[in-house]
Length: 433
Ligand code: GDP
Ligand code: GDP
Image (cartoon, rainbow, N blue to C red; front, side, top):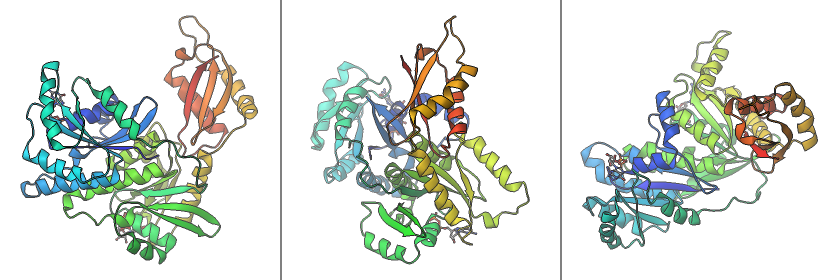
């Protein structure tokens, strides 16, 4: 599945307002309070059962005057290459500006679906004003008020028609991607794993259109490595480097089963790392964390433990994630990292037989039943695992609406304690029976 919506447009038209609306702004506020994701410009949204990743390109605009227009233009080109759908946002209160025209010109040359969206149509009186935007020659114009949300549903209804369906379980090989900020050691790791072949593959890459998939088959391990590490020298405007690398990461992540998130031991886990982590988690991908450059850390017997605790603190509540301490430079534990990633892949595709699930879980539930609410007792009768690409469980009970988050977390913990799901996000549903 690769459903990526990029919101493009000049500054101040309302891109980030729409972004927040599409990605549950309430959660964004919570994240902001914990201070982890202030620079959050990408996230997961959902509309009528369809999940997608949204990216607000505006967050990556370079500030200095002279690169400004060139930067936006290049950004739109990157977005065209990497996204599946583009929202081209304009502002009904200002009409068409030169920069709008400039962006429209780039978009007209793309072969991706473009949705011209006239924002700030806060009342019906403004409706007639949107006709001017048909002048772009980009088809239908959608009126929107990001502020009030009116028009969002109509827009999304049309957008999701362009999404790909869930792929069938085509290629049975695990797909692994290595993500992380620039300089953490991604390229070095890929090189260490596949050696000389890498150069051949990258040389052939030519355009940046597709992520490179490398078939790894050595030392008894076979998987597809989705490589983006070698691909980030394509931007002409250096301010776009981060934007470009984020776009590539998002795309690679959508295609992957397991994300190996590399962090730099000297810098610790940072907000950008946590953004990638949450994106992977929300997309139900398997996750392994590598703490690389471990050779540069002065160690005593407590160091590893302290590191682990620090990471757990930042990635809460999903902490059942393997952490491997590597030195790619010294080739220390890099195969271990791959083994763990493949283990996570197995955990993520694990199927627990219904009888075993009930035998283990029902007695635990009997011992610690969900707390009664308004004098009503909640009875969980049986449990099944739902078919899917990641672990999903249905708990059938009399009053599913009365079960609260703490109990859900208790159930998840028990599932994790009894069946190994390390690295795999779990979904739990309570259903009426
Ligand atoms: P961006 O630079 O494109 O991300 O724009 P922002 O989302 O930061 O919005 C720019 C300004 O427009 C802010 O002051 C918003 O409050 C305002 N704005 C965004 N959407 C709407 C809208 O639908 N109606 C009105 N009236 N103002 C809006
Ligand atoms: P990328 O941007 O994530 O692909 O990072 P690179 O693979 O290009 O590595 C960035 C720099 O970190 C290079 O100079 C590497 O030699 C260095 N590096 C990578 N892994 C390690 C490691 O485990 N230990 C040390 N000391 N340096 C490393």
